[in-house]
Length: 78
Image (cartoon, rainbow, N blue to C red; front, side):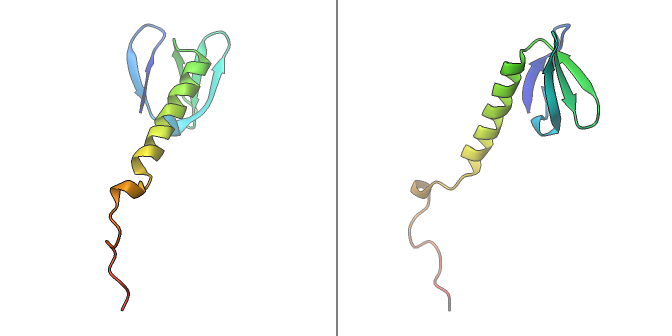
């Protein structure tokens, strides 16, 4: 989830996987795949950066790090 600020100041957590587009005209509007729209205080660039950071953190957390695995941990096939 990413956190955004609604126009009137309330915080909201948004699932970035459900974002279809982000528009800036002049308020930033997040458009979801459901058709719903959310006006936020953040700029288009900030939203894109937050989604990017969110996805990068997922990849970093779930990628295989060779240093964390010991060699020979697999049993040989019979």
